[in-house]
Image 1 (cartoon, rainbow, N blue to C red):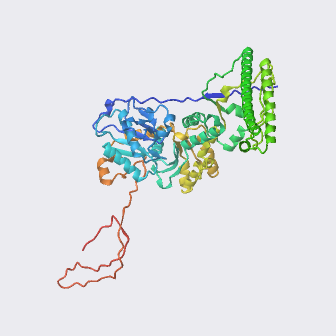
Image 2 (image 1 turned 60 degrees about the horizontal axis):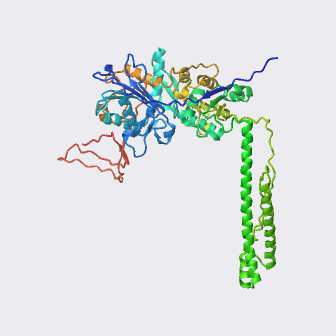
Image 3 (image 1 turned 90 degrees about the horizontal axis):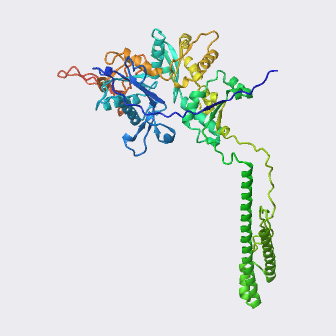
Length: 621
């Protein structure tokens, strides 16, 4: 007979890691060139990564990694703003945090300027009035022209950078991983990217982003963290203050996973053995000192005796107060009765009305009752003073009806002794540690599942794989085969264990029978976009290749101009339409040429028009 051993529970604790301020680096000597070594900034909505596009020791990774947030109180000076790692703990300042992003698009240029100041200062750039280094900057897929215009204006006008290049972070990661695997361009594939605020489906055809068929899903890491916070706060209403957003992000990064088959995995969690084996118990901080936790029998008896003595004193004071009140009422009624005996009938009747009584007989009845109550109260008070070891538990007061003018006390405190509890009974011990534990069970897979089923959070939109199927349906079968043969996963929200297997299973159910597909995961889903941007900057020097926007081009073509390259968005210039007031229709006018008239005069026909394009040229005869 096999012995059934209880499963070992897994107990974890929150790291609550606090960031330390970034050091201010010195400008490396190899970056002091005539053209300037490019600065690569991966401007992510969750984290900003910045470093130099250079080879050699010390340049293998980004120099700066910090949260893309700023905290400044209202009315505070600009120098008092805290950026990124200057904020050791985000939770106390959560209500002050501001980001430059609205979802994945930069809209707050004031915060973006503070982020750039932080980056350039900590990288060691001390030149005043300008930054003499080209800048490679990531942007959102299909970034609005207005947002790019404001960003170019900030970089060229405020920092006076010589060159700027814009690229999509997912495409940088795509090309970096393909170069690591030594695949020859041009590449064709489809990118599934999920970050902090949104997720994207990006088809790449012959090395270029097909922007027409790009799709965005407004579900990503921030929605998963908020969903997990709501689930645990509903589950543990006694620990609302401990369930913070920063801790939920830690739970997502360290304890969550993606189920290959969501419904089948939930069925596994119904088993008690599976639950005890897989549930993660998160231990919250608490104090182990419990009042009265370790008390001996003698101490408990002494405390009980003290409680009994206090009850006796309280009952004695109440009895004395009650006797005094009854005596005062009796004296007032006796004074009213003396008015009747003295023959002062008018004052007597006024006093009866004031006491809400109708006759002298009613007054005499209340006097008799109060005399009896006062006498009983004195006897009980004397009896309680002479008795020892007896305890009064409660005193019953029975007031008269509301219409009566006097309150009578029919009974007093019964003098019953409290029952003694046996001292040998083992009391159940309250487990303070277990009370301060969060049992994270099905929440581990329910929160990452919103990427595939946004309806779990109430979002009325398609999931990631349903959106992928919609995008693939817009291509021919041959193009679909080429796209699914290279499905690439990148982004910080794609790092859940089991994500690749889940995408493969969904593709297997989606694609036709016996069709081929291949899913690959980025080597470093959160950092490969920076490494891809650095590789691109090393392969394409500023000023001598495509992809760079010079200051002269910015002034000539406008801030929304984009120099396209393999990892950039497509540039679609705006067509400016100038409205023109409509003129009434006129009949065609024909002028005859005379002998002395110029032969260049021709027939002119005027037609009404509401607007003319800006690029229409005017022809004069």
